[in-house]
Image (cartoon, rainbow, N blue to C red; front, top):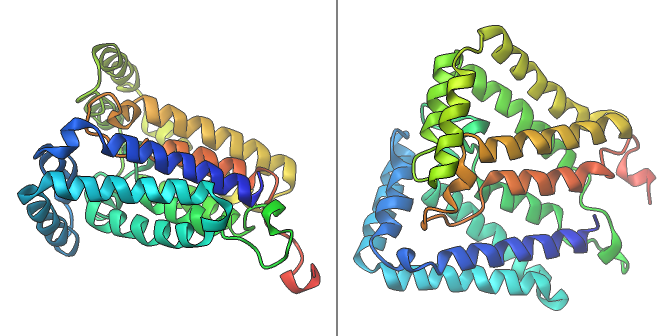
Length: 292
């Protein structure tokens, strides 16, 4: 993937977000009640207070606010697809993504009691900002063909090692806890997916602590593999992408895309994009100034 390819990918994702924002339900009180307010539940006061304030403001004029949100995301998506508008589109996308991450996603639930990769932490909006920064055009005339920024490998490591820490901190630590988390993801899912989630919850309910500890270790290995030779890094990228897709389906309910009030595809597609971005990039073993 080149930087231009990453820009186009992000542009398509922003257009999908805009399409989701244009759903009829988003122009009603459901935007505040079903999307914004839940992000404040169980969060620290410095997160919940501003999120609840924004939810209150949006609830007074949901149609106007939602139209503005949708049009802004549509403009970002179109801007990223147009080469001449890439830089301002990336700048606006980063600023908007951080605003959404704080005021719309409640920092991805990181200050709550159930933050884990399985539940969508650290939030899709943060990954939008990270990927946009990694897609920023280079200074050379041929920058359109440059690979994404090499530091995205550090972002990959932080995501997975951070996920392991979240798992140890307040993620599901027993089989019944894991089963409850998976079953909760069935809320709002279509019947066939809900039945699948409940079946999966029954299966993982007997998982022992040793298996969960092993998964924590696996997350650390996937993250640290970003600094290993190409073959190991590529294996870790594929395994990590598959795990996130599994989270997206089992317990994540496809980020409620079928519920009529999803505003983005969730974290999993963005982690897959990050995996593709680091697949052939990795971390250079030489200092940047020796590569000139």
